Amino acid sequence: MEVSQKLNVEAKEFFNALASSVAYDISQATGKKVNPDQIYSGFRYKKKMKNKMGQENHVDVVIKQFVSPNCYEASFRTSHGTNVIFYEIEDSKDGNIMVHYREGFEGESTSYSLNYKIVSWFYQKGSKKRVSRMLSSMESFIKGQRTKEN
Image (cartoon, rainbow, N blue to C red; front, side):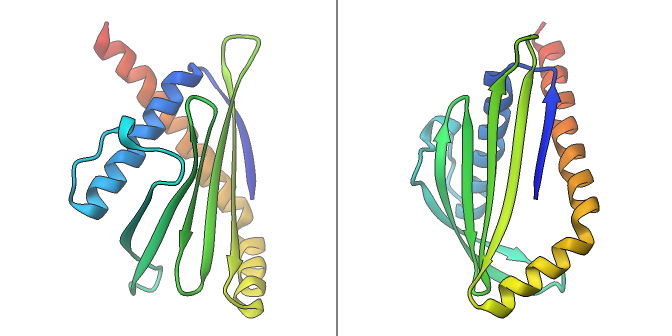
């Protein structure tokens, strides 16, 4: 799935908000305080997540790319397969940014991969709306932070 959306914020602001969110996730998962400036490409950690059925899974997270203010990519590996999310941030000529978000899944077996493709086809429209709302929320959050600072 892929979503591209124009946001009325600066690339550095967006990346900093994303980095803060990642640092918070790492701190919650590991119990150790992590600042955004401590994150790098290749950073790894483990976390527990519940699936839609309420079952707890162990997830190995690898931050594959962490290049301010241009891109962030992370993989989340479970016993069923690996989810990958990717943000690419481009400066726009009008002072805004274009954010390209992609996510995918590669199953541990052909049946897991096929199941994901079938299920994601049904939920694709809702997933795109969810990502679009998340990006809009990040834009609003960043603008709110600007107001607080001034």
